Image (cartoon, rainbow, N blue to C red; front, side, top):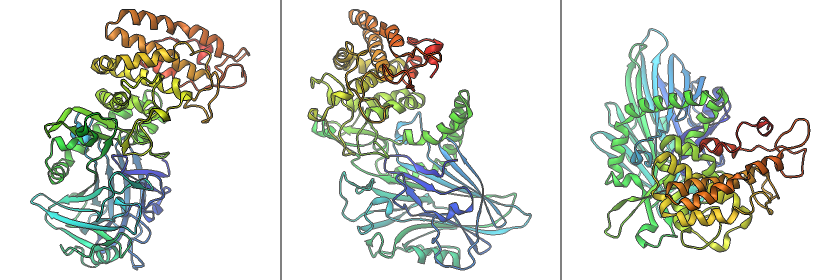
Length: 579
């Protein structure tokens, strides 16, 4: 199990982890943003027979209060969409499940940036025990600068109670230390018997719960800076007496909403520049979305468990280690912005869907081609149509611009997407053009939808023609698998050029351009020369990283595309596959 484990991972900005070692000390560490620098205040406390135990949250959740129980982490399990903590808190067996659902067949729910945390508890003995739960969040979710003033509100409805909080003066399309400055955070729970709520100073609310087992259903209206008396949004529930045969369950929902979510500057249509999360096509308000989200937990957990089991089973056919890697990375791969724009009539244009990825962990680049290429197999696995949505922003921005090779991204100021031809870099031409051709071919093949390659055929052809004549003898070029320094004649990059050409042959065939199909099919025959040029001549015979460097080795991950698309250009030649 990795030291940082995911809690809520649903979008580039709803992205939290706990960076803690195995053992009981995990509960003494605050959840943090993906960069592990910014604390995201989020705590959970259980009160058993009047004694509190911190289930998650920082070391000082309850201040210097005496008599705080020490929970024991007895198990930690991660699946593709769930992180499950098994905890002993006094006489109670507690399971805390952080669920970031992947709704592979429902784009509206997939685009809804909300995540669950569920707590199930049962007694380990034959006795009844009084049980209450508490949880709160701070406003650190909505600004990377704790001196910013925030405001909040509480909504009580027949089925849910939820808090919302944001900067009092939002700063549109900006971020600080990766945290969006134009977002609203939501924290919700079911309006069940025994449920109470409160907003106010963190330690005041927590100690009030410890003393009384409930909150006061009151609101603090003294809006202030995030770090001034730390205003939090809190929920609690009293489940009464619990025993082994009647476990208790409580569910909270946390969400981070931005609207608009993306500024797509390349659009020729002014109305389509401002893009919102796709869930707005189904819900007229966040309130409606929250009610649906909270009432859907039971089905969401059931579906998530089934999907997790399927993913694990499929991945284990490769190896157990691969299954674990998939369990860690699936939520991250799907934590994207799924957007839609309005048409000139002011209504949502459901045919204008775009998916945006941020270069999380490295920069603010928008839809980096190498990031999409690294994760496109995930998009194909969950919903092949979504790969087309992720390619669309890049294709539309470059169509008709006359640049011979593909752009590496759409600017470096997420969530604002731009396209500037003056910033293109020819050293990335084969890497990015090859990736775009391979992904375009994969989308058409697995979605059985050729509309996108038909619409952008001239653009794809332009890219294929650029590098078809220089694939084997490469000028100084960049490859994702290198150390970041452009090099000459790299084996993996040369293979990408050949596979990109072959992908163009398939694209041509799909749109019934037989002449182009024959041309590009012939070009892809360079594979024999590639094997000869990039295979070492020593006894061990292996693929070298660069031509002429017999002692180097190459991790030729582009072989994956050869197998995925069924080209089988490289084949099973043992001298080539000894890598």
